[in-house]
Length: 106
Image 1 (cartoon, rainbow, N blue to C red):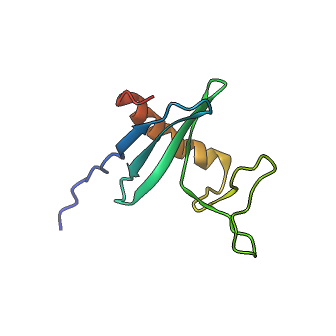
Image 2 (tube, helix red, strand yellow):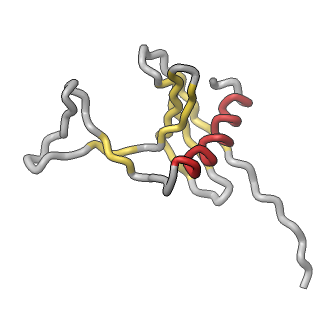
Image 3 (cartoon, rainbow, N blue to C red):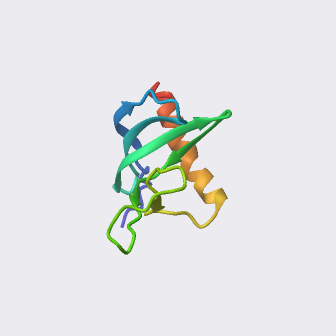
């Protein structure tokens, strides 16, 4: 049996949509991971010199079946995908941010 080293395909970014908002949100995109997993509705933010990736979330629903609102009146969201530590999240964000920069999106 031959043992040939296979390279892992790189992650890819598609469906980029730049957003010109006064918030930290720069844009949205679809992310395809080396495993073949596709994550739609990803977001990238920049604030105070820091950049980070935000994975899609879901709006929180009250028992009354209405959207849960924060004190500022905006809809509150919950994470659908999370990381076991800040370090793991940063390791995930790094290559994604590199690809967004390489493509000229941010």
